[in-house]
Amino acid sequence: MISKLKSKSIQKEYNKLISAQGEKMHLKSQVKKVAILLDNEALINVVLANLSNNFPFQKEDITVLVHREYAKKDEPSPQFFTEKDLGFKASLKSDNLKDFVKINFDLLINYTKTPNILTNMVTLLSQADFKAGFAEIDDRLYDIVVHDASFNEAVLNQELKKYLTILNKI
Image 1 (tube, rainbow, N blue to C red):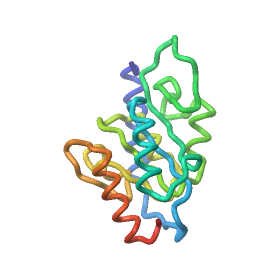
Image 2 (cartoon, helix red, strand yellow; image 1 turned 45 degrees about the horizontal axis):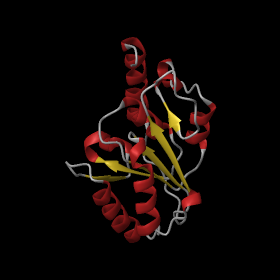
Image 3 (cartoon, rainbow, N blue to C red; image 1 turned 135 degrees about the vertical axis):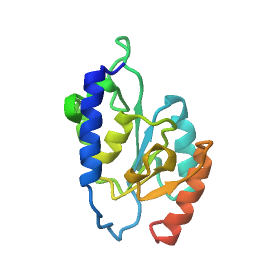
């Protein structure tokens, strides 16, 4: 569990960064490199299969990052991050997380179903051109926001496909 002091520090930095972000220019290119943020590692295969079946994305062009609770017995993996990977004032401690936010993904999809300052911070810091997610989390983070009270991944994918097609991104 995150200490209250560390959590307040991250929240304060998050609020400062989210209010300072301005309008960004989007590139005119097609979506090729995709990043996925999850808060449930059981959904990895379901989400990957759904994306590769419904979108023209190749599995090798999709990068998945999953937030999970810290446990001493878990070995570090480039596919996972925990609260230990973020420090005070949202400083990134792990090289894996630093690399993830630096990569210029064409699209980042945040499938998290509960508000979480850590996944929100990673989304905010990401250099992805387009960001998509559920409106109930924090709609200021995303370029494409989907309102679905049940947090259904299929609904998010369906709406995302519709808007990416309209924008000529796929």
